[in-house]
Amino acid sequence: MQTLNELLKRRKVLSELETRYYLLQLLGALHYLHKLKIVHRDLKLDNFFLGDNLEVKVGDFGLAAVVNQPRRTICGTPNYIAPEILDSRSGYSYEVDVWSMGIATYLMLYGRYPFEANDAKFAATKINSKTYLINPLVSECAKSFINRMLQIRPCDRLSVK
Image 1 (cartoon, helix red, strand yellow):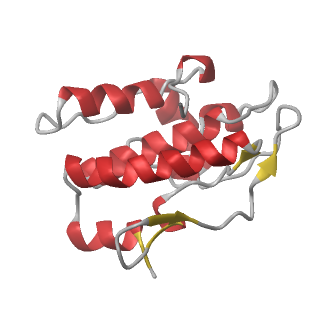
Image 2 (cartoon, rainbow, N blue to C red):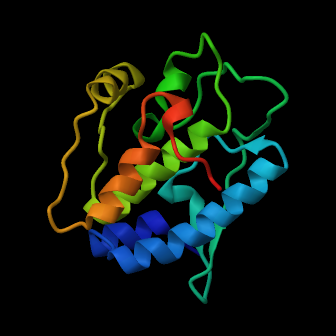
């Protein structure tokens, strides 16, 4: 089974139509997980698997956790990690998955990470500066969607709903 990351490596970028098609499925899966009070904590293109009919399945639940209180464990993949995980004093919840979906969306449309970094500390610096490239060929709607998922404060992010 191919991952979305393997597809992206071959294609470099995906169209907005393709990205929307995959995102609708992924957000549906994420909504289901969150209704079960599960936060995945490691959503990334390597963990999105494509079936024969282009249906997307979410995999690798090794870092998933039931949310019965704010989590504080620092975990995840550096280029996808939400800022509140890096500063876990106040804890974090479902919003970390929304952040990761924002990173995945950006990656599908732009072919690169918005806050590319080799380690968590450098990632935090880039995230806090909140500067990433904006492609003029991507629609304003897509740019706004990404921006609303990549809000530094979790309460300002879109919800999965």
